[in-house]
Image (tube, rainbow, N blue to C red; front, side, top):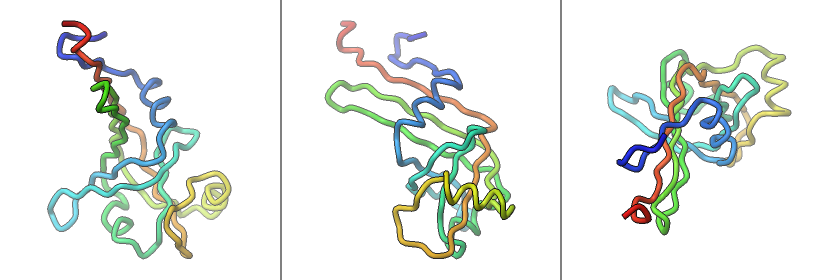
Length: 140
């Protein structure tokens, strides 16, 4: 449904479909008691959780393991003043199961950075919300 403010709420399935179209999103977490946002490449797992591959020594691993975080991805077109944004909220944890880690080495996201001590962070898709923005100039 499009309201006269130009935004349309997206259902869970549409949010997941859109997340599958983009390679980069942002992890929103707390660092030193302050909000922090880190752009990361990612993929979705079969259970709809967000997967990030990083170094075991990264600050991100220490900051998010076991805590609730948000993950946001979007796509906008300035020329048409349209686009979408999806937010996944859930507990993040480092994948420690050896079989799961091996599976993710084959099927999970590749890091865009050269790393040797790969770990995967899984963000559970406890809550998924999204909005689409449509160009209101055409409605005038």
